Amino acid sequence: MNARVIADSAAAGGRLHGILTWFGDDQVVAMLAQARTGLIPVGPEGLALAREREIQRLADEFEPGGRFFVDQILVNFDRAAAMLSDMRIEIGRVVEGELVIADNPAVPHNPVTRASGFLNGARIGEGPVMMPLTPHLIAVVGGGVEGDTTLDGHAVEALNRIQISNAVKKVYAAPGSDAHQWILGVREELLSVDDA
Image (cartoon, rainbow, N blue to C red):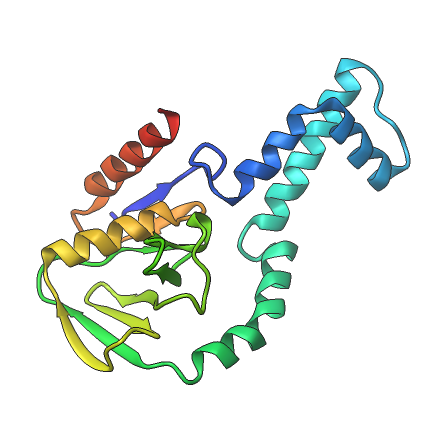
């Protein structure tokens, strides 16, 4: 079975977490509803319905393929292409283990703050960008090395943890992989750290 983990971005403290916390404020919900519909929700039921509609609208927009997702790709494409065009490309070959890939696979790394991934505050241009290509190949753009490199089991596990922690919703492994239980374990570990 193809290992697929559905991680709740809000519970994991992902990019929707900060936005969704605003929906606990009735004034924010009333303002949003009025701005979109021209009507001000009244009473607990009206606010609950408006809150539910706003959260669903955001979920639809942030879903890969949704309006927000597509708009962000279009806005950032030219800027990212210009930044990455002069950078070195390194291909990492896995000699032990398999790489997983998330629905948010291009992961920038900031070597100064040690942050990896957009969801953790790293940005393109601050350091290398890592992206699994297959279960046995990864591209590293903007690192200090150009050419081929090999990855042992420890490096593969570290890269897989980064993919899991930066997933918006899903993490994939190769068909027939035995990584499913490991992915679930890492996901639970990451969620328990966020709850602490």
